[in-house]
Length: 161
Image 1 (cartoon, rainbow, N blue to C red):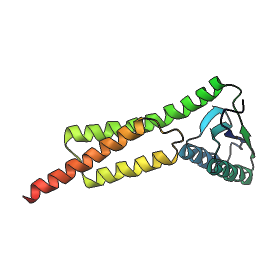
Image 2: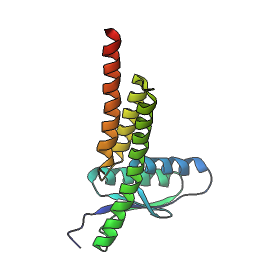
Image 3: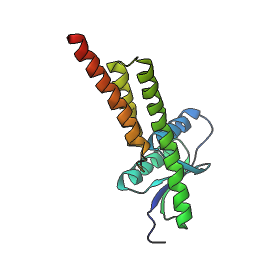
């Protein structure tokens, strides 16, 4: 299956106590956009960046008294690759959809502020940092936030007249 792209895998096991290191690893995996295959096994599309990030997390797991291995693998079939990609796409699409929904609600209620728009832009940048597939929802969410900014600019212009 040489025509399928590689994935980087992190297999890890951590002690139950103390829970703080386990929670920190979980949060970092979430921030990276990793998809959990089974308990203690996560995956991302293999890039130099994702390999390095998983290596750093493996070191963190070891420092916390756990066990960790990083692997590069090719899915066994095109169907498995599609399933992995779909899982990552679904998770990131839900995050974009949440921002899109909020932007649309703020526009309907006419409650947009510069602070709200900037907060949504920061959230979109955080989502993009863990977006490995670029679903169509990304452009829709950015467009909704940009429309809010345009509405604010128009309101500012109207109030100056």
